[in-house]
Length: 125
Image 1 (tube, rainbow, N blue to C red):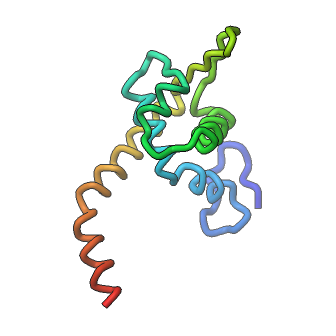
Image 2 (cartoon, rainbow, N blue to C red):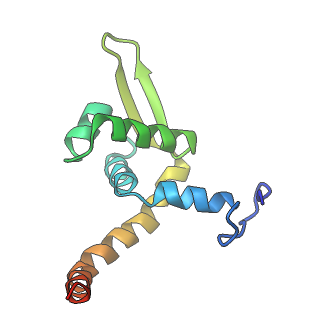
Image 3 (cartoon, rainbow, N blue to C red):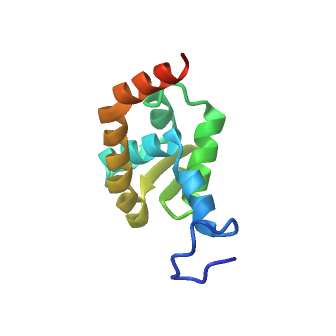
């Protein structure tokens, strides 16, 4: 099923585009990129700065994450025609609206991580 424009769709339908979007948005890298760009807003952040501030992310994973966010209309990309090119990113209005729910999810994870760790250890016994 493909949801019509403006329709919410059905999360439980395997063909629903909402499922694919949630899959893309539910990664740690997306949450980090959105947080960093939200903190910088309305200023832009260069690719190298994002990578520096995201320990553990590979250049490829950051590139893929930013490309997907740009395709989804959540991030705007600007390239300066220099050698090498300087690439800048910023949240779009739609992307900025994603910071609130992602922030709540990050806060929940931080608040409950100890409980989750205890439960995981208990299940391994």
